[in-house]
Length: 424
Ligand code: AOS
Ligand code: ZN
Ligand code: ZN
Image 1 (cartoon, rainbow, N blue to C red):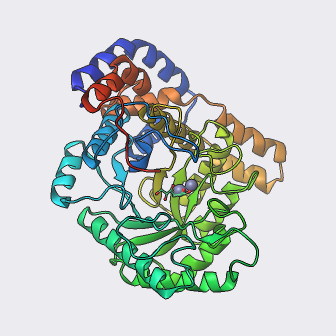
Image 2: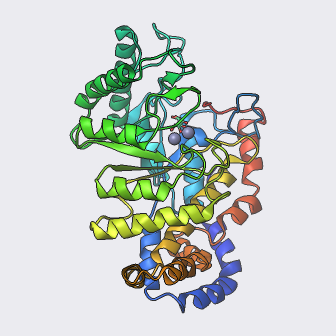
């Protein structure tokens, strides 16, 4: 389904007066509101293809109906999100869940919605019916060379699919690890992983990156071979310039200071980008900003400060992507909420009075430093986001418009109530 332009225009017209009043009020207190709006218009967040269906848990899956049944329908859903918020102009594919059989047609179809392809994701955490060897005991770290070779070849095949779609990065998340002490020689596992990644690295085109994701536990519960940012950083350093560390917000143990990790990776030129989500206990894949929006703001504060110090373009210097999948929400509504939460945190970070903060730090004025951060965090920036969307041709209130047009009912009519998307 596609959203007619006139629907967005009618929606915006009906909200325009109220919006203007709210915007003028907040704009008065922002020193360079035009600069902030421009940065917000440029800032795009990639949508993962697996987030468009209602996610599974280990225990069950409850489809909400109208889920995309094919890659084309996934692209159409991202197109719908982008038409509404003008902030999600790319899609990140997962191989083999979404095999782009005809890359030329798929690219043309995506560009019809103003979309392109972000990082491609490999999968060596599940066995596919056609494969010779099992990943039960790992993939790139496996003790058997034949299994490692199969996993290496899969990653190289994913690069090839990605190259045809003009993707520029391979995202590698391994479930490799051990469930019990003694199962694995940890140094051996690390060395084999490095060796396997080196083979994949050699197959990367020159203008590509490989993003090495870390995760402390699950599906293994004793050790994970790339378990934290130190292990990922070690691998990406040894691999070379094209390798970087990917930060998935849900992949940290409770109360980890993620903003500090981000700050140092950025300093070293090793921050690949993000998988955004939120969590209460672990890799829960909850909606970004639903649990700890202040942490998200503090992460963006480090990013804005660190990127400005290094002269990096906020929108393009690193990868911005959502990684979440839900059991109970409409996936499109959830993604609209997620993108909004990310952009709210970003906008608030742009409002931080950096020179004043530097001064407070210099003076060891801890109270003032907190005042400066929270002055920005407690500003309601939503009218600025709405203004940026309005100027870019999106909707003042994307979620309200999505609900108002009963778009999900239409999708259910087109695709059926039992349509189940590929993915976990
Ligand atoms: C798994 O926990 C990781 O977050 C992965 O990034 C991702 O969810 C998976 O690779 C889907 O392809
Ligand atoms: Zn992830
Ligand atoms: Zn995860």
